[in-house]
Image 1 (cartoon, helix red, strand yellow):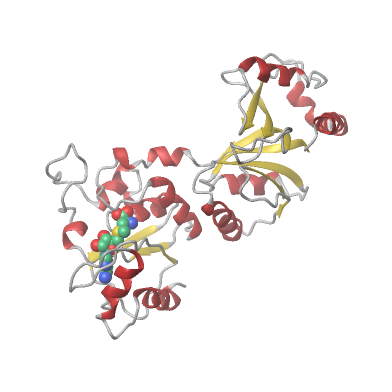
Image 2: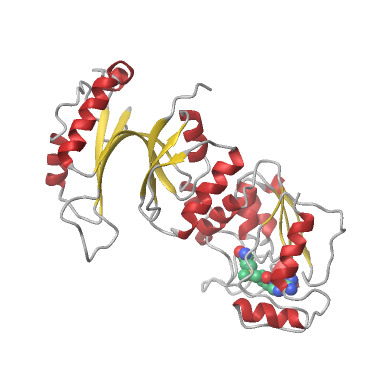
Length: 352
Ligand SMILES: C[S@@+](CC[C@H](N)C(=O)[O-])C[C@H]1O[C@@H](n2cnc3c(N)ncnc32)[C@H](O)[C@@H]1O
């Protein structure tokens, strides 16, 4: 791969923003990607980053769920006159390389995206017209253009304090979309087996990315519930294994959580969920087990342990939730101390 550091715009969905940085860091670490992040304010939905080549950028986009789309940056500024100067200069300096996008036989579309300030369709067209110096010769095609350019204005994050001028004006060529289509594909609404504690598809996918699950990994969830985290781990290519203290849950005999459903279907199970999403071959097993009583051979090892412990109990009964539940449940098990400590020790010993 030839190294040619370029700037890219990363456009993130403005939800689960706390996960954005950790997802980014996990993906670059997992694939060993080089990068330079030029945007410091990570709450912004638009980051400018540099990657050493387009392959690196595409690898990142191939895994990110937080990412809406990625663009090759042509120009970026905080001031409109400077933005136009930079855009002209970029097109001039890269005339030969960009010529194929401007050709007569290449259809195009320019999308105007503004954040935190609404513009009418007329105003958006006026913004496009300010870039009439672009040497575009091809026809407009709004439905399926061969090249898509995006003009982006970022007007801050606070809807009650919209600035006089945009904070950022950006222009770039669409290169790839992120993996947000998976959120819909794995939606709980259509999932075969769900329960009250099923984790939503987006969070599960983000967590599996944080766990750096890769093709062929062995992944374990010790508090598996209805297996949402196993679904996302399997979707990223992991072989998945789960355990849960609740026999009825593991066997999908717990009370249905859908209002419209009175009784469980016979064929509901975590395995059926994986089958539904085309990754049944990734299913190893789910077992009934209390995590506070060690079950696993000391020599077992996993590539990652991924879990959501918002409700923890032990054999003696339920706790209430969160940390209190966790410490209550665990106080009765003197051998291991608090559950989080036990989980951390287990992970330290069994994650390879
Ligand atoms: C928040 S739920 C997990 C939800 C799961 N991520 C899903 O998508 O359905 C926590 C699970 O931990 C299980 N659990 C609680 N205490 C446990 C223990 N000591 N050992 C194993 N599982 C336990 C509960 O039965 C529950 O299914």
